[in-house]
Image (cartoon, rainbow, N blue to C red; front, side):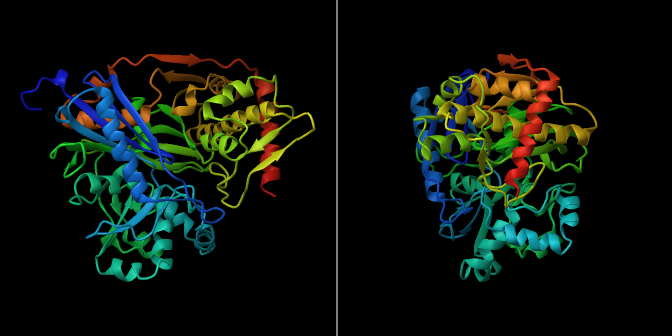
Length: 500
C-alpha cells in the first residue's frame, strides 16, 4: 500500500455485463464513491444467436474507467487494486499475438449449439458431464460454444492446435487486456461454467476437453478468486503496476458482495437474466431437480460451492417491452405502468426468448403470451412481465428446496431490477420468502471490489468484510398460501402451453 494512508486509497471494480459495463470506485470503508455505466451493441445475426463485438466490450470498460475516475474526483494513482466481475459463459477466442478475436463473442444466451448438445445427450454423455462439472449439457455453457467456433470458423482449429489461439470467458479477456497481453488466466468460478473443469479438482479435464474437441493448450490457467492475478500494463487513464487482485463470475461476485460466505446463504440477482445462488459449503451438491452445482469461492486454499438456478430472460423481457414493443421509453417506467392496473387481466407471459433454464432445461421453447382480450392494455402486459420474472424464480427456489431437503427462508436480492418496489413485493408474495435488499443494489461490482480489497490488504479476512455495515430494506410476504399455489398452478399451465 506504500506510504499513502489507507483513507486516501481506493478500489476500482469492473462489472462487465451482458448489455453494458459498470465501473465503480469504493473507499476503504466500502462506500461507493463513483459509478459509471456504458451500454454496448447487442447482435442477433440469426434466431437464437446472440453475439458481442469484443472491441465494443473493451471500449465500454475504458469509458467506464475514465468516467468513474472523473466522478470520484481522485487521481488514478490512488487506485490500489482492481476487481473484475463478468458475464460468465460468454466465450471468445483470440490471436495470441495480435489480440484480435477470431470471431465475435458468443453470448451465454446463445442457442446455436442446441443440436450438438442434443447429440451428446443422445450418446449418453450427460451423466459424465454432470458428475464431473455439476452442469448439464446445454448451449448456455461455454464448452459447446468453443466447439462451434473451432468447428465452423475456417482455419481456427488448425491455428489453435499450433498454439496460436487463446480461449477465454470475458474475465480472461479483460485480464489479458488490462495486463497488456501478459496474463492468460481465469478464476475457478468462471472455469466452473465451461463444461471443461472438474469441479472437485479445479483442473481442466482431459476427457471432457476431448469429447468437445477443445485443445487444452488454448485454455487459461485456473486461479483463486482472491489474490494478485496480474498488474496493469498500458491501460488508458490508469498507471502501470496496479494489482488486479479479485476476479469472479458476476453471480459469484454478487454472492460475495452480499457476504454470502456461509452454508445456507442465498441471493438472487435481477439483471438481464435472474440468477439464484445458494451456498452449500465445502461439498458440491449434485442436483436432482435441475439446478447446477458451481464454485462459489476459491480462497486461501479452500473451496465453497453453491447450487445455482438461472432464468435466462428477466430484465431482458423489460428491455423487449422498451425496444421491441415500445410500450415504455425506459426500463424504469415499467413499475408505474404495471401499477396502473389492479391485476394482469388474465394475461400470462412466458418470456422464453432463449429457451427455459431451471428446472426445465429446454433450449427449444420460445416465448408465449396468452389470455389476451380486447380489454388488455400495456399495464396488464407490464404486470404480467413482472409476475413472469418472479414466477421463474419461484420454480428455481422450489427446486433448490428439494435438493437441500428444506425451505429457503430468506433471500438477499440485488441487481438493477431489484430497485423496482413492486417487483420485489411480488417476488416475496409468490415465493413466500422474506427478501433483503441492500441500499446499493450494484452488489456484483461491490463483490468484485471487496475481493480485490481483500487481495490487496484493505481487509485481513472475511470476518472483517462481514462487519461492514450495509443498510438494507426488508420485503415480507403478504399473500396467503392458497392464493399463492393457485397463481403458481396457472403459471405452470402457461409453461406447458409454451413447451408444445
